[in-house]
Length: 489
Image 1: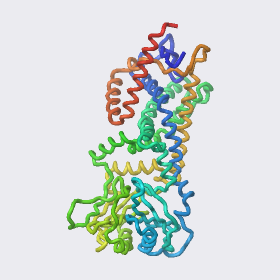
Image 2: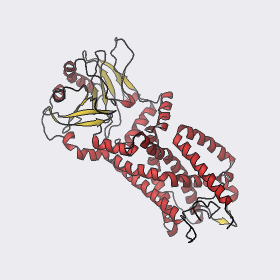
Image 3: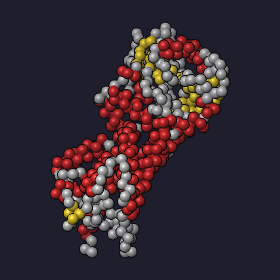
């Protein structure tokens, strides 16, 4: 049997046994989701799994990137000096003296003893979301080095390279389609795989003895790959679904739809207003979803004066709920306040922010994480978890284990597909055949109609799923027509 032969074949290993050409539960099969789940899981697994495997392997590296960054860039991030810290204004002044031609935009004070202060500048030569950071020893107020940092998380070059590798394979906007395709299909494949695994476990329990969803059945040597494939999938399912959902938010097309939906439902990340009371003009936010991500902000009108205000601003911020590592956005205009916002660092679960008038020391706006909308909180936690930052090193190790488990599942899936191929000498380029055709005819209308409606909605909201699903249908119909045109064996 060749790859184009889609005539009815034996049921896959996980299908119910047949008796007289019909399964024992054939009269009830039309009411179940099993046939459709089997065929869709097969096609999506065969054609989309390579993209998911690449995203999984690059994601495993991305998961531990913060720890790798800590080792590789220790000379920039940590210092061995001890003693009292110098004034924040002195630290920033030393960095400005090292980069007098670049506009000063922000400073991230040293989070704890032994760590450096980051003084951030806008450099027109850098790309989007990139800034130049001068790292300063807080004990001596002397610069120890500089590096380009990316985004509001301040990723250094190595972590930025790993992040972009996971995101687009360094192929630009076109390369982002691979990761969007993987994230978009991952939850579909996982949920249909869950349907198949539950079906198989129920059948095993009915035949022999209790067999739980968590345990592979090792008593069937010929089907151990299938059993391990299903059991591992059940173990990692919650994390896989979370990674898929958060990954979609970063994608090009589905991510845009997610952003619009969040805006319509008021689920976006809130931001403080840094416009001083009594000044003309609309409110100006600082923070939000893309806090400090740009590189086009102008230099402060009075850099020396703004630097002199930093010590008081930082002290006031600490007294008003800013208790974790934070970044101070330095205002470029007289009518704007300092924006102080806590950073998304390992082990950080809340992000508070305040706006402070540098002249009077008054807190002009305050935003506690407790006041965020629930969905904004969940989104923040989900993204931090995806980045390996929510729980620090344990978070990264969990993601690494899940990535390795998902990669093992994909390899086992292809091995099962290969082992199901026909072995007759007359076959050319023979591989495992798809499950039986006609799944929609075997599925009840009470299931088919809602599924088709759901597929249309999902296909519109997540375009790469819709387009690829349409491609699967075209290939399936073409193979069916080709099979009918072949003479009977």
